[in-house]
Length: 190
Length: 232
Image (tube, rainbow over all chains, first blue to last red; front, top):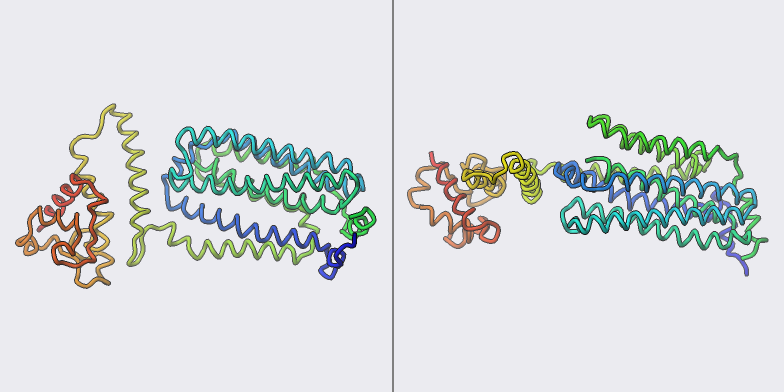
């Protein structure tokens, strides 16, 4: 199969795929940045939200932060392995990253189940609306990343398309960074 | 896609020395522990620094070492900084209106009301816990004053003298409750009717909105009593 010529063009100085992922990240910054900036300004305007935030589970949030940081480590180690030409090792590390994403989503599911049972639903008040919207949008990004990671891992297993290991890694690290900011905003500041 | 195609492209990527990723992960985890423990001291400044300051440091470490932004082309960094700049621009443009619930000639009544209701609810809960009883009969009067401040004062003024911030733009001017002449032709039933059905119901300005669906009969009665006490 013939490859589109654009993927090999280097007028920009970097591989086109990597340029594309940076554009994705830039647009994601605007999406998450807009959401978090809106949350921050509303949070400052509503001193009572601190009381609502007291009901979020800090231990679960901290554990999930640890999980995502660890999954970022496995993603970057996969990139290192891919650069060394060791596709199967990269694939194993990518699947470990997927496991981290799965644990993250499971913990999130348990958290939400408990909170919804307590009556803290999406429409309870402005704080919970932001909480579920921001964490939900982030969760969807985790899920999307996991699916792509599995595809990239399947190729890497056979030493194919190893450059994609770095690309999905950049995306995954960005998802990690978003959580790094969501954690103090939703769990720590009470 | 074949291996033959992918390898040249991967080789085309800038190969670089890899930092000790496990060591960086260790630093990130240590920072996480600090960001969780810091707020336990209960000092606001410490909470802000440990929670948000450390989040910035963690994000920097991930972007630099895991995303390799430190060795990426500079225009990529400019691209990302521009996106962050757009976020800051959006925040700077609207934050003032969202964070403050009143300004020159405007008030965000819904937000003020939500804050007051929530804080009153918290105070009520803690008061009931402390006293072990519900608030006494003075409560409805306090509620009327609060309702007046939220709903009436933007037009009728804090003192009820018809000189609220929005009065500048209104024709006819809002009623002056402190004027004895105003009360010569009005009684409590009339005031209650205006609050419930709006100004148009008594042939007055339609800009005086009806509040019958917003307040209970008891609240409207208490509000009318409060307005009558404003007479000088």
